[in-house]
Length: 162
Ligand SMILES: [Zn+2]
Image 1 (spheres, rainbow, N blue to C red):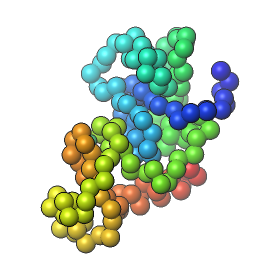
Image 2: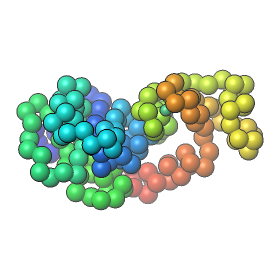
Image 3: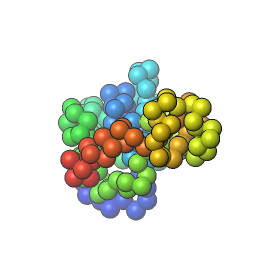
């Protein structure tokens, strides 16, 4: 597969234990991105899972030999922004701003709409004043809203030209 192969369907990811931040950001951008966690699973198990679930394997490990049927991206950059840019360029992706914050950054689950009335009881007082929609993660219960963090994330994407 060429480095700039066109991705015909929405890519899904599995990030190894060194790429937790990247996995969170991919999920924030709305991509299905699983983080392997820091449990130190043997590489073979992770590779097999990525292959089975048709996920692109993201790693910083340059020593992993190619696995047939598995797409792997080896990230040379140590910083999040470099890694994010690399993945987007390599796969020809452009994040859809409308999908920003549609997945939980911790669980990678799609967020559910949370009625404002219910949300108000769950968020800090200052947030109650915000004219925003609320979403909740069905896994961890974390509540998401538009505020400083979403603006900061959008600003970061602007800066990266994404
Ligand atoms: Zn969650």
